[in-house]
Length: 90
Image 1 (tube, rainbow, N blue to C red):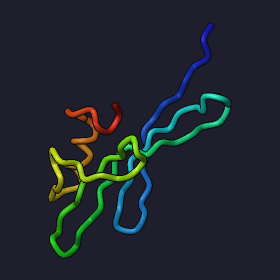
Image 2 (image 1 turned 180 degrees about the vertical axis):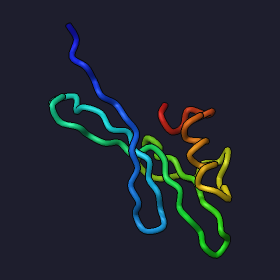
Image 3 (image 1 turned 120 degrees about the vertical axis):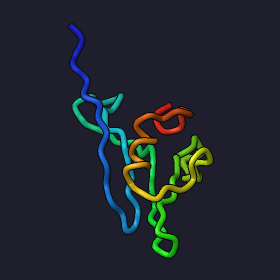
C-alpha cells in the first residue's frame, strides 16, 4: 500500500505582502514537510492596489503580466486558485 501524501496550500504575511506557498513532504525525508512559495501579492498603499507576482524557475519574483494589479486581495486569491496560465502551480 502506498503511503498517504498530504499536500496543501498555506499563506504567510511579510510586511505589506501576502505569500501563498505549497506544503508537501520532502522527497528525501517524507516524514518532514517542506514549503515552496508560489504566489505573492504586495500592497501598494499609494495606489490602493495589490501587485501580483509569481516565482519563476530563477527563484526570483516577477510581476504576473496577465493580471499585474488588482484592487482586492480576493481577486488575487481567485487568480491563484484558477491559475489560468499555469504560473503558480505549474
